[in-house]
Image (cartoon, rainbow, N blue to C red):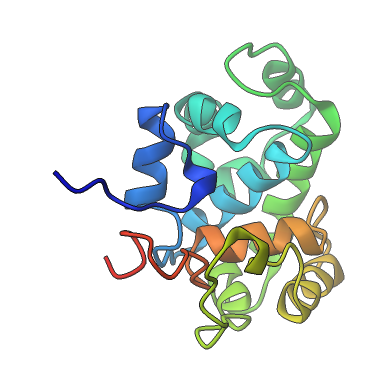
Length: 183
């Protein structure tokens, strides 16, 4: 039996991480609420393991009303306090307040969040052969972070922006021999 080759970051021990790698990471995600969810989760991930966020993702979805931009944009201080008391999510005031603020910024975007983010797609990025070939920051992620910040977004630096770009398919950083590259 031939073992499937995957990007080394996916590890081989956690089924949730493997499923994320094989079925989600690098696949195109469009729609304002769907992209907003990814922006919010990437911000919550900052300083933590992505697996931590994956394990809490359903709790995040429930706590943040499915990442509906209009609903989260309407959150008030009592909602922030409710979220700070929710042990099912990452309880970081700055990140929670950033998610609410980012929903308000997304709501105000002409053309929407998905359109703004997808303008920074880089389908012609080089195919990485090893993890050393995968950048943490690119000119595109710097431009995306700058554009998001210009519109009032928080927790969206160039590294977070690049992680978002990878996660939602703006770039394809599956390694050249990874089984998920051509799926």
